[in-house]
Length: 210
Image (cartoon, rainbow, N blue to C red; front, side, top):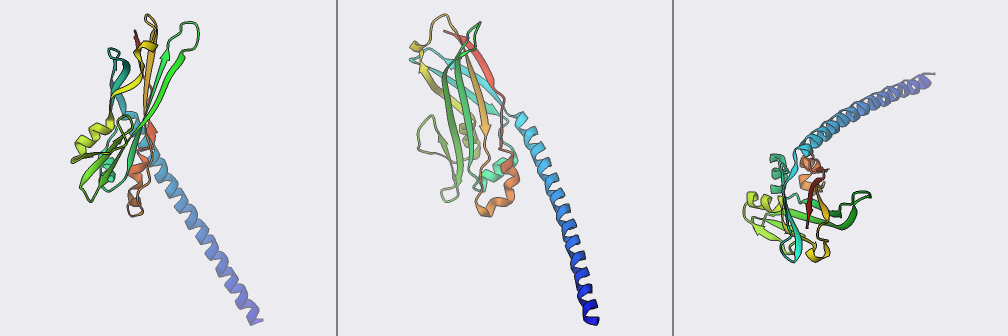
């Protein structure tokens, strides 16, 4: 009889412990969800600040080229993550279309390029790779100059000017995406900063004629 009571007592303790664990787990999940929502909100607010400016088209040479820059795409937190070894990439989307009055615009060219940056702790330099240039990273000694390379696109070739029709109107659209990257394991504690990179700008448009 006593043995049965002892077993029952242990079973009751186990049930209480299980309930407490479930309550604790639920509280932790709610806290994590709240933190992630806050991070997402700040990421959206931060993304809304980034913009593409100074879009310039050059149609005087053999190829139509475009230049532009992104502003508001770096924060102190991002810079801290980069300095600690996080590889960051910006993706730029460029679309060229022919404007048609009574029909949808005709797509002519679509280009996707990336700019990547990573700090080399051994050489103490920033390695910047620009798709539109070549595969050889540019070594930059200070972050400010590296940021200029990352946020600027200069004379990106689109198509030969001779392929465009004189008297016709065209539209050029540009968009930037700031992609989430993964840090080395020793740097996972700054994942919040990396999350801020996961957004896109609006499309920016410039109309022109030949």
